[in-house]
Image (tube, rainbow, N blue to C red; front, side, top):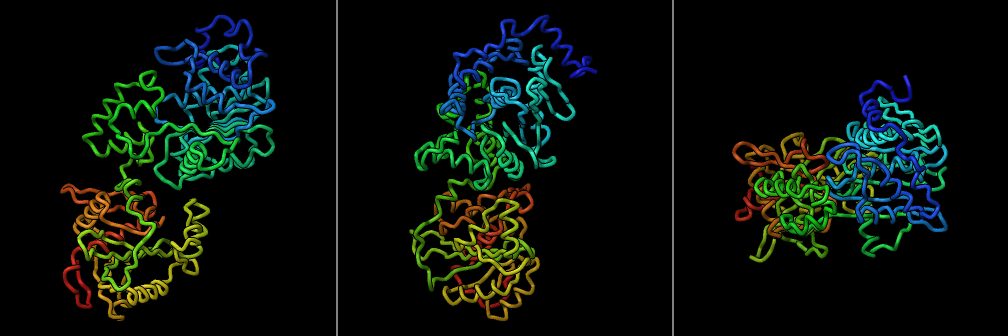
Length: 539
């Protein structure tokens, strides 16, 4: 059968391209006068382009790409010091081609080591195959490489007989990378990963290697708690001097500022280094014109074309707007009239109560105070499995633990009683689902409760009002990461009449505090002008 399968279409194509060696004068990167980074650059620029109008020509790195490589492969006493490299930029700026070239460099080029283990990782099998297929095409186009490599396409694995090194494409939806000893790893579009398990397993397996290297090449994640966002924030803090230098970490970040004008062509050029070169300017301009008129496309444009931390699935609120309404110095509202929204969880999830205080003076915003409860066992589990920092939020006092593995509503009722003593709590809106016991207890205690439906008719007016108040900075809440997280997670559904409601099904993470805020705001808007007698009021 041969090393690749001599009857494959790819092998036949490669055989027709070359009648002799690709490097008749030897490998150009073996020149002893070159430093380490220069050898990597020379290797990449000696590879052929395998597809498109420039197929057959050699790759040519742009100055900005060479700058990235020189930073990643800088040495101290001939040892490469960077262990983790982050490259984040918008789509279509040549990330995958660069990733494939670097993987080959570590498999059989100047960065190869004896019996090295090289991996590319991605969120799913299709994404994982992109780098493998590019590497395969290059190997088959170079007789010297094809002769020394065994390609197993089904397993997406390549073995270099000369060094004994192995490359394998891995996906996060496959078996996890336990027991490996990577010498080189490249994670393609880390922002798409559902969790960080594969990333952690790869990076923690490098202890037996002298100079391991992890390269992350990805657009940004909209989730501020995602591992990709952690890396970007760390890189930004190092690059701007907020944190001291970390020689083992390098970050190249091409992204439009959050407050930049997304329709300004200067902004496009600043964050797309290949724009007007191999990144099509007309295509970007055409998409921008559509995005101006279609809100759902605007989110995609800002995330994928400008590399901003915006959800391409059009989350209801922007992080910048959410953060702008958070007050570090929150006023004392004791004795003020307010309305509550209570979103009861299933037995193991987040339960939320939000109090909303209507303005008593013209210049005042609506003030909102959130409270959240989670079973203590769920805090530990979710902090470990989902990498949501419930444990940190608990220590900071933003989440109140309830002992055990399921919600006990006793502490919640006690908290509501305490709040009713501190504030003039007029009424509490609740979702009828699973709330009968709590409602009975509140009613017996003399509290007015408002049953609040979760459909379009009930949710749409206060949801739209919440959006308006946030955009106009006419609502304020404490600088609380739980309410900001829930507001940032919201994805809204729209019906044929243009009504909206927050969708727990479509939202990737918890939105309970946001739902409770909508209910509390509705109570404040509807009932602020009149006192409601203790009873159950139907909305």
